[in-house]
Amino acid sequence: MSVAILVDSNSGVTPDEAKKAGIYLLPMPFYIDDKLYYEDVDLTRDEFFRLQEEDHEITTSMPLVGDVMDYWEKLLEDHDQVVYIPMSSGLSSSCETAMMLSEDYEGKVFVVNNQRISVTQKLSAYEAKRMADEGKDGEEIRTYLEKTKFDSTIYIMVDTLKYLKKGGRLTPAVAAIGTLLRIKPVLQIQGEKLDRFAQARTLKQAKQIMMDAITSDLSNRFADPDASHSVISIAHTQNQKEAEIFREELLELFPDRTIIINPLPLSISCHIGPGALAVTATPSLVKIEEFE
Image (tube, rainbow, N blue to C red; front, side, top):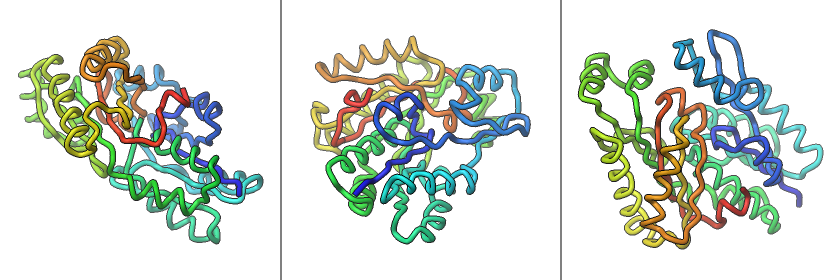
C-alpha cells in the first residue's frame, strides 16, 4: 500500500522541507491588488511583508478546487491512496470543501479534519508520513490524526494592532486606544479558532504570559511537564532575532530539548502583520528535528 501525504502551505512546510521529508505540498493562493499569487512559488515572504507594509490590498483564499483535484489525481497515478491535511476547518472552509470533493474518489482520498495550522499542522504531516512508512493505510492515518487533533496549543503575541483592525477583528476605537497604550495582545489557537487570550504592555510581559501558558498546558493538559514526549516550537513573522532570544529563554525552562524556529504561514501573517512571536507545544509521535 503506497500512501501519499499532502499538506497545504498553511502548515509552514517549505518546498525544500517537503522534498526532504517525502511529503507533498499544496501552495496556498493569495490575492494582492486582485492579482493571484501562490505562497513560496511566485510570492516570497519578503515580498509579502513589503507589500503588506506598503498597504497593498491582500486577501487570503482557499485553494482553487481545480488545483486540489488535479494534485490528487496526479498523486494517485503513483500511489494507492492520498491523505490530505488542510488547515483547520475552524479557520477556513477549505477543509469542508475538500471533504466533499473526496467523496468522488471511492476511498482513495482521505481528508483529515485536523484542526491545526502552522507548526502543529506540520507535525501532523510528519506523523502521517511516519505512519505511512510503517504501512498504515489512509483510514488509519486519518483516524489517528483526528483523534489527536486537539493535542496542541499555540500562543501568539501580536506586535501591532493595525492588521487586526484592518481585518475587522478590532473596532477602530479599540485599536486606537490599544495602540496609544502600546498593548500587545496575546492570542491563542486551541483547535478551531484564533481567540484573544491575554494582553501585555511589553514584549517581556507577553513572553512571560506565553511561557506560563505553555508550561501549564504541558503539565495539566498533556501530562508532560518536562516536554519529553512533546515538541516545543517558536514561530514568528519577520522577527527572527527575537525568536532566537525567546528560544534561549524557553531552553532555561526545558533544557536539553530541541526547539525549532519557523516562520508563521502567510495566512496568519496576513491578519497579524510583522513582528509577531509565537510558541507552540504538541505531544507527538515524531521529533520535528528528524525532518529538519
